[in-house]
Length: 498
Image (cartoon, rainbow, N blue to C red; front, top):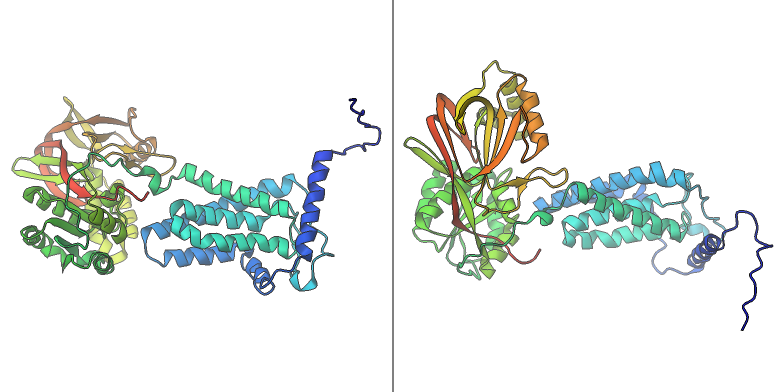
């Protein structure tokens, strides 16, 4: 059987059979959509498409997510907007300029469907579809539940561009692919919190509290915890919640430890530190509900709200984590997050002076300006056998890792290490501190260094030196010792559901 020769003599210059075939199919699909009857779509899709002009619809959706007051929803809103911004930048700088495609002819589109003002930009790719896909994908990567809510709206916006005759189907598909890609690119730069959940080890044997009976949770009312405490009571109706003022937290925790099977705490990192000391003393498992501004320990555990903690308590999921300990003469204490001497404790104390007047973040900026501009000399201490000037010595309870552009987080809360960062003394403390912050872990330079050790001793610390631990500040002098208590504390954390 012979195969007939392909006659190329009729092929026109610039003619590409595959490309032209795709464009022909695209036009036929567009015409089929234009002639098709869409029940109920007439009053909805055009208005929905118009509401997405300039990203207005997605800004409103982000505001609604942020209003839910849950950390996961706020992060989802932020990630959705960041993904939208990157997608819009890519469409306007690369997509529209690289492919000069005319808009579809409106003859097949019924007059009632058409937009009042037709777009004047090129057709490929669809900016509306890119923005919709970017926002929905960004939200879903951070919170699948909220992503499921946003996805139908995003799909309807993308569909409206074909329905109203503004774009060919391939324009919409290309825009959606570009938008989804932008969301994944943002995740590469700033990973989602679920990507950095620490390993569920070593597991601990703890009671499973199906309705919360045996849990006594102390809530610091100064941290605005009433709503979170009510949410936990709704999840675990037999749990006991004790609300008290900051000055009564320590006494309330001691009293609660006398009758609790599980000691619970709701507050910021300082309140959680107090609860950890009591739990260690009474050998009780600890349940932490974040209720402060930063909540580093709870978030590194993977506990963000009452639902996370309730799931762990009902299922009896818990792990053992390391605890840091410091001692200076007769004074000693523990830290779950960080312990530091030098500039940072001074910044913490200065921030506390102003936070109740102007708010936390403005107070932090003012404190940094005052501390770094003050005419003071670096701390001098004997560190690893040498006496040297130090602007800052930071010790983390566990190794902090940076993934992408995100701030450092601990991926293992039981690694047995103190993550020690040192900023050496010298001129320009602000530049040295900034360089150390940007450099990340395991770096060495004339300005800063980082090591991981199990124990650290500072000698000849000058009187009046400030030491900060989990947001609290005390005075130290002489010898200061930092060490790890491996796997000393048992804490509830959700192991499944990620």
